Length: 234
Image (cartoon, rainbow, N blue to C red):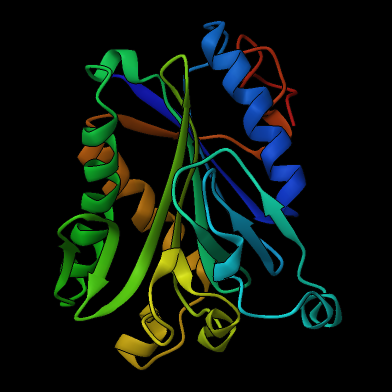
């Protein structure tokens, strides 16, 4: 069975995470490392996908400055998205050449990971025809925006665990109307820490993608692959 490394990065600035993704993508394309899954939280940030409409940012630049929420235009699909504390963000770095070079299948598999996770918790999650992501009723709980270069993935998903949903009022998320976001905490009525979902997400990801997950400490990400997990490594 093929394997992937997964790493919990904790709270990580957006630009730092983006630089890490690009470095790992280059190493994956060079065959130096296996597939990767980075899991983390971001400080508050807005991102706009390629071709996204900046008009879907409803807050003024002055208000965003006061809230210390930067805006990044990036090369991923989708429109405007909010990331922040209480949201489990995942960045898979996968070589899709081994998966039939099928970007559509990749998106549906990412959705399936969280549909399975939520159904396992008794929450009736669903897809929405013609749109990417996962919904519970009419409220979106999972956003997806990906990029591909030479069939290696970048960017990924954002799962609302205990996100401050009022901050979605700053934007029209992915062109949707306001008030259409929900979170796991809202649905279950109990507090759940983001880090407590990591093992569950990794398990469902491994199940859907047919791979075995191997934990990798963040300090090991840039070691030569022959040193990873050896005695004396960090």
